[in-house]
Image (tube, rainbow, N blue to C red; front, side, top):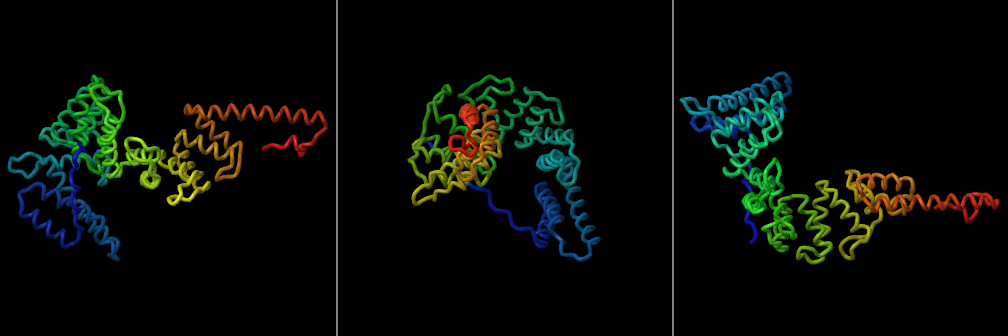
Length: 391
């Protein structure tokens, strides 16, 4: 059956002076730390967006700094003493402040030690995302020593608390036997399915990985199901996940995974992924422009070259080969054998056998030309004679 997914979160209302004042009054009259934190975040947002029209730059700066410092003060208080009165620190504030120390936002100096300590304090109160970040810190050695065993322990805790990213990560660790763990496809699929059931635009990865698992045989305890794989890729693609969009473009181009051959759909999915800079999809569009599709896409050698070049500039080996071929033959670009050779060399350096063969063929062709040139010279023919012309 198709994995069900959550509805998107409601859109946040636009912050205005009136909205900020409402939040101030609510925070003042509320004992809820969540209201305090949302007000603090709004103050920081206001420090960026409010008062830009004030002609007095010194006053503008002073007002912005006051808003910012008030917001940061509230967040730090919530992260250390919470609401007071013997109540614990607020884990959501700890998580927010830890992220700021981790990436240097809010003008804070990057401090992985402080970030880790805040994450682990929030994790003690079973904050799912903070528990996931604690695991990441242990895996990478950020703010604490690297410890794969502890990392897996916290990934498991975060996944059990319902953190989608942790479910996905744990599934991949167990599927591939990473971080010194024994591979267990059956357990891995269970975690990936749980992550997929909670997929959204920020967490589409489990849908795609599940699709890869069910796409073909080879994974123990997994029975291949092409139709199910197609549905998973379609859901991930709908969330904007470029690898899944490429996958569908490829399937509709060649009629794979129960997809009919459908140039229009193939081109549409390739285009959506290419708009995100996906190199494989850029090369896919190059192929479509090379041939064209009647009633769907007009053939264009120039577009074929340009799309392949975009992918090649990202280091995609097959695209480097394609640009080499286009340059050698003169498709969409002026024929240039030396330029072709450079692209073939780049592709061959990544192990592309077709590029290696073209280089060998070009070398043989060059040797043949040199022999013909030498014979012509010995027979008194000049470089412009018909038998001595270079391609």
